Length: 384
Image 1 (tube, rainbow, N blue to C red):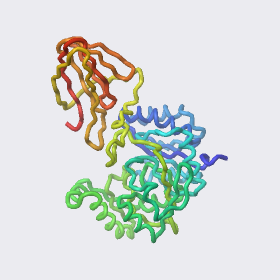
Image 2 (image 1 turned 120 degrees about the horizontal axis):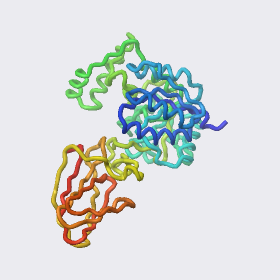
Image 3 (image 1 turned 180 degrees about the horizontal axis):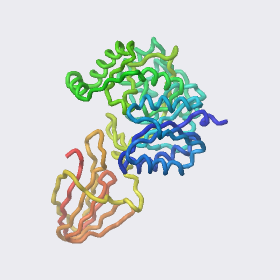
Image 4 (image 1 turned 90 degrees about the vertical axis):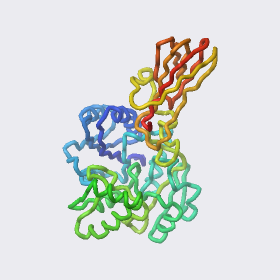
């Protein structure tokens, strides 16, 4: 039995728009090449279509939990976990894409089990606040792809000094069933209190992570009464994420894994590390012959008229400056006089007066003027 057989894929996700569904079609296929067993609960308006798609992906053992309630993520996921017999689970989210070779990913999963790790964050590598270069106080052992770190009650405070924002649990993770079960049990109280207005007011009094610390202190009392206060709606998985000072030891120590190079990347979120997302790297949208060009450009934009002389080149690369951007920025080129060649990847278009074309500006393109040319550029960015 391979060590990858000791890990199941687990997912309880909401697919409520076409973009998320399109992401899933790419990312779940990669996952099916690594994990034989998958346990899935799909929520949202696209749930039926997603289930139909996943049934044909190729998991050897596929278990669906569509009958579970959708108002309480922790409670529903607890029910799923009861049916998992493997040592660990890979928590799958559709908006994180594998950017490393599949053999490397398989090796990381194998190492996770061989080293008997409890937790490894597999994405947001550039944004990580704990790396190979700052783990000297904790270093234990390493493989070609993974470093193992032991954290106990004494060293947890040192971790807080080395990496003040380190999460001892994030959702995009490989996690042992034992540790994941303890996290769910700690969160799964009979009464869950959530007030969107209350959290909004609290966040104005104390910015993140200050309001999270306040809620944490409140919960140390409430949990004695089987009650918990939630920062997010109970239907969200994000209540489960823990910064180091929220950690409660489920055992004498926590064995953390760190990847030595990047495995996954999120499509739209820099997570405080500029250029982290696939959009910022020009790797999303996933381009093929059908969607080289955007179907439409809409929303707020800035415009500028430019003049080019014969054979002058003009680059169309543009990235948004905001940390989390839901849509790739678009630039629209409209020819007022003259003509240009528009080069995008391996495509070439000729634009004549009155014609226009939009491209994804994060992927970029090049204009080459044919004679003296006047153009109007419109840049669409949700930051505007």
